[in-house]
Length: 222
Ligand SMILES: Cc1cc2nc3c(=O)[nH]c(=O)nc-3n(C[C@H](O)[C@H](O)[C@H](O)COP(=O)(O)O)c2cc1C
Image (cartoon, rainbow, N blue to C red; front, top):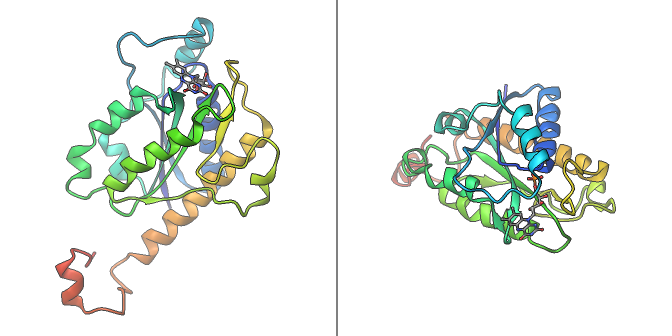
Protein backbone atom coordinates (compact mmCIF):
# COMPACT_ATOMS: atom_id res chain seq x y z
CA UNK A 1 0.00 0.00 0.00
CA UNK A 2 1.32 3.45 -0.91
CA UNK A 3 0.47 6.31 1.46
CA UNK A 4 -0.25 9.72 0.00
CA UNK A 5 -0.93 13.00 1.79
CA UNK A 6 -2.46 15.88 -0.15
CA UNK A 7 -1.92 19.23 1.58
CA UNK A 8 -3.75 22.29 0.33
CA UNK A 9 -5.03 25.80 0.87
CA UNK A 10 -7.99 27.14 -1.07
CA UNK A 11 -10.38 30.08 -0.80
CA UNK A 12 -12.72 29.86 -3.74
CA UNK A 13 -12.60 26.11 -4.28
CA UNK A 14 -10.46 25.71 -7.39
CA UNK A 15 -7.46 24.21 -5.63
CA UNK A 16 -9.79 22.09 -3.54
CA UNK A 17 -11.48 20.75 -6.68
CA UNK A 18 -8.06 19.54 -7.84
CA UNK A 19 -7.45 18.03 -4.40
CA UNK A 20 -10.72 16.12 -4.52
CA UNK A 21 -9.90 14.70 -7.96
CA UNK A 22 -6.37 13.79 -6.85
CA UNK A 23 -7.74 12.04 -3.75
CA UNK A 24 -10.25 10.07 -5.82
CA UNK A 25 -7.59 9.03 -8.32
CA UNK A 26 -5.32 7.89 -5.50
CA UNK A 27 -8.09 5.96 -3.74
CA UNK A 28 -9.11 4.30 -7.00
CA UNK A 29 -5.47 3.30 -7.49
CA UNK A 30 -5.50 1.55 -4.10
CA UNK A 31 -3.50 4.13 -2.14
CA UNK A 32 -4.13 5.11 1.46
CA UNK A 33 -5.05 8.81 1.28
CA UNK A 34 -4.96 11.71 3.71
CA UNK A 35 -6.36 15.09 2.62
CA UNK A 36 -5.19 17.90 4.87
CA UNK A 37 -5.76 21.66 4.91
CA UNK A 38 -3.25 24.20 6.14
CA UNK A 39 -4.39 26.49 8.96
CA UNK A 40 -5.84 29.87 8.00
CA UNK A 41 -3.83 32.99 8.81
CA UNK A 42 -5.14 36.26 10.24
CA UNK A 43 -6.65 38.77 7.83
CA UNK A 44 -6.78 36.77 4.60
CA UNK A 45 -7.80 38.86 1.58
CA UNK A 46 -11.03 37.13 0.56
CA UNK A 47 -12.20 38.05 -2.94
CA UNK A 48 -15.32 35.88 -2.98
CA UNK A 49 -16.96 35.77 0.46
CA UNK A 50 -19.74 33.37 -0.57
CA UNK A 51 -17.32 30.86 -2.10
CA UNK A 52 -15.07 31.15 0.96
CA UNK A 53 -17.98 30.41 3.31
CA UNK A 54 -19.16 27.49 1.14
CA UNK A 55 -15.67 26.00 1.05
CA UNK A 56 -15.23 26.45 4.81
CA UNK A 57 -18.44 24.46 5.33
CA UNK A 58 -17.48 21.80 2.78
CA UNK A 59 -14.04 21.30 4.34
CA UNK A 60 -15.10 21.63 7.96
CA UNK A 61 -14.26 18.00 8.64
CA UNK A 62 -10.95 18.03 6.76
CA UNK A 63 -8.21 17.78 9.40
CA UNK A 64 -5.45 20.37 9.63
CA UNK A 65 -2.12 19.21 8.25
CA UNK A 66 0.48 18.21 10.79
CA UNK A 67 3.98 16.81 10.60
CA UNK A 68 2.86 13.21 11.06
CA UNK A 69 0.90 13.54 7.82
CA UNK A 70 4.20 14.17 6.05
CA UNK A 71 6.29 11.47 7.72
CA UNK A 72 3.47 8.91 7.26
CA UNK A 73 3.35 9.51 3.53
CA UNK A 74 5.34 7.90 0.74
CA UNK A 75 3.96 10.56 -1.61
CA UNK A 76 3.09 14.17 -0.82
CA UNK A 77 1.16 16.53 -3.07
CA UNK A 78 0.82 20.23 -2.28
CA UNK A 79 -1.86 22.40 -3.87
CA UNK A 80 -2.00 26.16 -3.61
CA UNK A 81 -3.68 29.25 -5.03
CA UNK A 82 -1.21 31.68 -6.63
CA UNK A 83 -0.57 34.78 -4.52
CA UNK A 84 1.53 37.39 -6.29
CA UNK A 85 3.28 34.67 -8.24
CA UNK A 86 4.03 32.71 -5.08
CA UNK A 87 2.36 29.94 -3.09
CA UNK A 88 -0.27 31.17 -0.62
CA UNK A 89 1.20 32.21 2.74
CA UNK A 90 -0.86 29.51 4.48
CA UNK A 91 1.15 26.91 2.57
CA UNK A 92 4.46 28.68 3.18
CA UNK A 93 3.62 28.98 6.88
CA UNK A 94 3.05 25.22 7.05
CA UNK A 95 6.31 24.57 5.21
CA UNK A 96 8.12 26.90 7.62
CA UNK A 97 7.06 24.59 10.44
CA UNK A 98 8.47 21.40 8.90
CA UNK A 99 11.93 21.82 10.46
CA UNK A 100 11.47 19.11 13.14
CA UNK A 101 10.95 16.48 10.43
CA UNK A 102 12.87 18.03 7.53
CA UNK A 103 16.14 18.67 9.34
CA UNK A 104 16.59 15.09 10.64
CA UNK A 105 15.89 13.90 7.10
CA UNK A 106 12.48 12.35 7.68
CA UNK A 107 11.16 13.75 4.38
CA UNK A 108 14.09 12.42 2.36
CA UNK A 109 13.21 10.34 -0.69
CA UNK A 110 9.49 11.01 -0.56
CA UNK A 111 7.90 11.60 -3.93
CA UNK A 112 6.52 15.14 -3.90
CA UNK A 113 4.56 17.08 -6.46
CA UNK A 114 2.89 20.51 -6.58
CA UNK A 115 -0.08 22.10 -8.35
CA UNK A 116 -1.60 25.56 -8.38
CA UNK A 117 -4.64 27.63 -9.28
CA UNK A 118 -4.32 31.23 -10.46
CA UNK A 119 -6.81 33.69 -11.85
CA UNK A 120 -5.09 34.58 -15.12
CA UNK A 121 -2.96 32.88 -17.77
CA UNK A 122 0.80 33.44 -17.40
CA UNK A 123 0.21 35.00 -13.97
CA UNK A 124 2.28 32.75 -11.78
CA UNK A 125 0.97 29.17 -11.66
CA UNK A 126 4.32 27.78 -12.75
CA UNK A 127 6.26 30.23 -10.61
CA UNK A 128 4.30 29.14 -7.55
CA UNK A 129 4.88 25.47 -8.32
CA UNK A 130 8.60 26.05 -8.84
CA UNK A 131 8.77 28.01 -5.58
CA UNK A 132 7.38 24.95 -3.81
CA UNK A 133 10.03 22.86 -5.53
CA UNK A 134 12.66 24.98 -3.74
CA UNK A 135 11.29 23.84 -0.40
CA UNK A 136 11.09 20.24 -1.59
CA UNK A 137 14.83 20.37 -2.34
CA UNK A 138 15.46 21.38 1.26
CA UNK A 139 13.41 18.40 2.39
CA UNK A 140 15.62 16.12 0.28
CA UNK A 141 12.46 14.86 -1.36
CA UNK A 142 12.21 13.67 -4.96
CA UNK A 143 10.25 16.13 -7.09
CA UNK A 144 7.78 14.60 -9.50
CA UNK A 145 6.96 17.00 -12.35
CA UNK A 146 4.37 16.26 -15.01
CA UNK A 147 6.86 16.39 -17.86
CA UNK A 148 5.56 16.92 -21.39
CA UNK A 149 5.18 13.47 -22.83
CA UNK A 150 1.69 12.40 -21.79
CA UNK A 151 -1.06 13.08 -24.32
CA UNK A 152 -3.24 14.55 -21.58
CA UNK A 153 -0.76 17.42 -21.18
CA UNK A 154 -1.33 18.44 -24.79
CA UNK A 155 -5.01 19.17 -24.23
CA UNK A 156 -5.77 22.89 -24.69
CA UNK A 157 -6.09 23.74 -20.99
CA UNK A 158 -2.90 21.95 -19.97
CA UNK A 159 0.76 22.05 -20.94
CA UNK A 160 2.90 23.00 -17.96
CA UNK A 161 5.61 20.39 -17.39
CA UNK A 162 6.02 21.49 -13.77
CA UNK A 163 2.61 20.51 -12.44
CA UNK A 164 -1.09 21.07 -13.02
CA UNK A 165 -2.21 24.70 -13.14
CA UNK A 166 -5.71 26.11 -13.54
CA UNK A 167 -6.92 29.50 -14.74
CA UNK A 168 -9.96 30.48 -12.72
CA UNK A 169 -10.47 34.07 -13.90
CA UNK A 170 -11.65 34.65 -10.32
CA UNK A 171 -14.54 32.25 -10.72
CA UNK A 172 -15.09 29.84 -7.85
CA UNK A 173 -14.98 26.10 -8.55
CA UNK A 174 -14.18 26.54 -12.23
CA UNK A 175 -11.66 23.77 -12.89
CA UNK A 176 -11.95 22.42 -16.44
CA UNK A 177 -12.07 18.82 -17.59
CA UNK A 178 -8.60 19.25 -19.13
CA UNK A 179 -7.22 20.24 -15.74
CA UNK A 180 -8.99 17.36 -14.02
CA UNK A 181 -7.30 14.98 -16.45
CA UNK A 182 -3.94 16.61 -15.72
CA UNK A 183 -4.27 16.32 -11.94
CA UNK A 184 -5.32 12.70 -12.26
CA UNK A 185 -2.26 12.02 -14.37
CA UNK A 186 -0.06 13.92 -11.91
CA UNK A 187 -1.41 11.93 -8.97
CA UNK A 188 -0.92 8.55 -10.60
CA UNK A 189 2.58 9.47 -11.71
CA UNK A 190 3.47 10.66 -8.20
CA UNK A 191 2.19 7.39 -6.75
CA UNK A 192 4.17 5.42 -9.33
CA UNK A 193 7.40 7.21 -8.43
CA UNK A 194 6.67 6.88 -4.69
CA UNK A 195 6.20 3.15 -5.06
CA UNK A 196 9.34 2.76 -7.14
CA UNK A 197 11.30 4.71 -4.54
CA UNK A 198 10.01 2.83 -1.53
CA UNK A 199 10.59 -0.53 -3.19
CA UNK A 200 13.92 0.42 -4.73
CA UNK A 201 15.32 1.85 -1.51
CA UNK A 202 14.47 -1.17 0.65
CA UNK A 203 17.49 -2.70 2.45
CA UNK A 204 17.92 -5.23 -0.36
CA UNK A 205 19.00 -4.73 -3.01
CA UNK A 206 21.36 -1.90 -2.12
CA UNK A 207 23.17 0.19 -4.68
CA UNK A 208 25.62 -2.36 -6.00
CA UNK A 209 28.18 0.04 -7.42
CA UNK A 210 29.76 1.25 -4.19
CA UNK A 211 30.83 -0.42 -0.98
CA UNK A 212 28.68 -0.71 2.14
CA UNK A 213 31.20 1.45 3.98
CA UNK A 214 30.89 4.25 1.41
CA UNK A 215 27.09 4.13 1.63
CA UNK A 216 27.37 4.43 5.42
CA UNK A 217 29.69 7.44 5.04
CA UNK A 218 26.93 9.26 3.19
CA UNK A 219 24.15 7.98 5.44
CA UNK A 220 22.68 6.15 2.45
CA UNK A 221 22.65 2.69 4.01
CA UNK A 222 18.89 2.76 4.52
C1 LIG B 1 -3.67 37.93 -2.22
C2 LIG B 1 -3.96 37.32 -3.56
C3 LIG B 1 -3.00 37.36 -4.54
C4 LIG B 1 -3.24 36.77 -5.78
N1 LIG B 1 -2.24 36.77 -6.73
C5 LIG B 1 -2.45 36.14 -7.91
C6 LIG B 1 -1.41 36.06 -8.88
O1 LIG B 1 -0.28 36.50 -8.68
N2 LIG B 1 -1.67 35.44 -10.05
C7 LIG B 1 -2.91 34.90 -10.33
O2 LIG B 1 -3.10 34.33 -11.43
N3 LIG B 1 -3.91 34.95 -9.42
C8 LIG B 1 -3.70 35.54 -8.23
N4 LIG B 1 -4.70 35.56 -7.28
C9 LIG B 1 -5.97 34.88 -7.57
C10 LIG B 1 -6.04 33.44 -7.09
O3 LIG B 1 -4.81 32.79 -7.24
C11 LIG B 1 -7.08 32.70 -7.93
O4 LIG B 1 -8.35 33.30 -7.73
C12 LIG B 1 -7.14 31.22 -7.62
O5 LIG B 1 -7.91 30.58 -8.63
C13 LIG B 1 -7.77 30.95 -6.25
O6 LIG B 1 -7.70 29.58 -5.96
P1 LIG B 1 -8.79 28.93 -5.00
O7 LIG B 1 -10.11 28.95 -5.75
O8 LIG B 1 -8.32 27.56 -4.73
O9 LIG B 1 -8.85 29.76 -3.76
C14 LIG B 1 -4.48 36.14 -6.04
C15 LIG B 1 -5.46 36.11 -5.03
C16 LIG B 1 -5.19 36.68 -3.81
C17 LIG B 1 -6.25 36.60 -2.71
